[in-house]
Length: 520
Image (cartoon, rainbow, N blue to C red; front, side, top):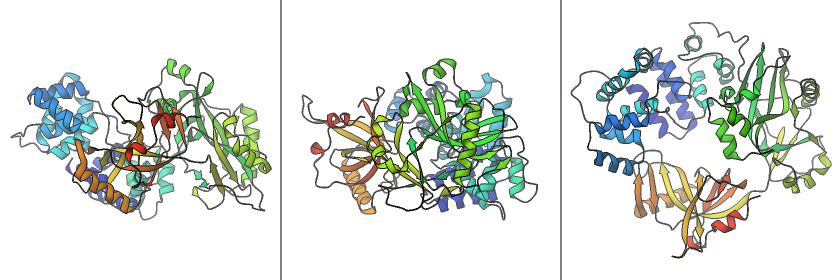
């Protein structure tokens, strides 16, 4: 448990991808099987443990601490697992902290009535940091914020010959603790056999542009659709649906995994509907977050995939074919099997179509593609050019900051934004409207925010600090949607922090009323 805790802690405060990959590689080198395999499962969301419910955990803690102190501490820290990890009383036990493999095996073998006693003995044996990671494992999973592909890159870095693409090719054919994968990576075994098991193929991506420039080379055009990019894979009659990061979404979308008469690998955009209209981002997230879906949710928020490319057909890899050939094969395949296609647009009318995106339900831009290019993973210059809607710009007030860890100078990871309510009876007030990453801001702006937060913190909730209104940030976003589930009544679509607006008083930032008017 100690080595895994150290890895999680280091990953949380290490922002550079290359350094994160090196940390994972070192951990895998130094950790025996099957612990390192279970660690990979935990980091990628593939480790399913018998969960401890928050009410059980709270009851266990109430037996060991004053209930009033527990409530006050939870209110201050803001997270039950972190609160219990810090408040759990020291024990005189000589038992060592459990290993990951011990946790998995013991939870599997222990009768349900005895689980609480086992968990309590583990918490007794752990220091606060390890307790926190253990409780995360038991109450929903460890979240490091790393993309799954970066963790797979750490696995590939352990090998002398396997690439990230090689690891991704076999990953979804395997299960924890990934013994066959790690034997192959270490040179002790053959490459895992994935025949008949649908596996992920890295996707091709487009380069974003503000507007297209005249180009004599031929292009084809399609709409950019709202939703989520997915890969639909059928191998020997078995179907899986993958996200753009390679996460298996099949369980959340059983309505999209019925096998066809022929095997294929198709690229497309996952879209959901509600009441016959394109669903909101919240509707999509409701489906994406579910590991199982009931009939009521399938009726309420049905899903479909609008396909636009074909990577494989009947065991024939088509990625080296020109786009024009892949498209022709896709159109024939879609017609034969009744699939939904992304239609081609007249390239000479793209400017007019872009100006009238509101007239096309679910369209959020236009993508231009060169028909003579192969399908290559990643982004490649001008092969695909994404022309999204013009970004909305507004000014928001900084309400909360979140840091990667403890300490006043720890890296900033997230901001909570506020909009002004200027018709309140007691003067201007603020309402939260969303969160944004500070990734696009300059080092100078971030230093200014850090200094301001040190002097103007109101409350602390674990790594989160509420601060006095005073800083205004320029924000760009792809759009603003209505949201009945949020107090503000709106949701920001792909918001980005641009820069501080030092000359703007917080009372002069955008009002909630002005933002609600921007909902399309």
